[in-house]
Amino acid sequence: MARSANVWLHSALTERLVDSCRRNCRRPHLLEPELTPESGIRIPYERLPSATLRSVIEEYVTRDGAEMTDATVKIESVLRLLDEGEVEVWFDPVTQTCNILRC
Image 1 (cartoon, rainbow, N blue to C red):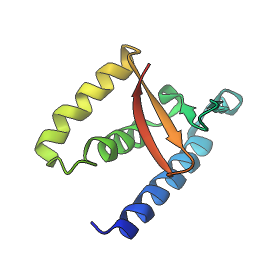
Image 2 (tube, one colour):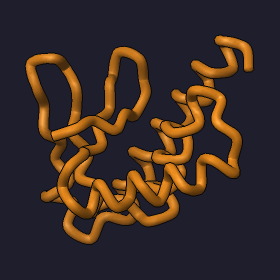
Image 3 (tube, rainbow, N blue to C red):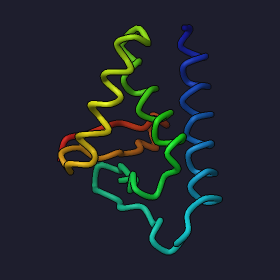
């Protein structure tokens, strides 16, 4: 995929993520992002609709060009790590991407 297409895809995913959070959050006052000095925003994964969360994780695990057959296993692994509190979803406003980072 061309770099400009990647930038557009990340931007589009980010917009969809934020819009989905705003529309579907049952308690919007809890949706306030956690800011860090590095300018990242922690996204509480529990507040994301399951389809949105799965899309964010799928985009993350396939960045390195992984085939979808490999991605399914990776997605399930990331979901398990999120549930166990070992990783978190972070949004980088500079690169307009979501990342999965270890706690």
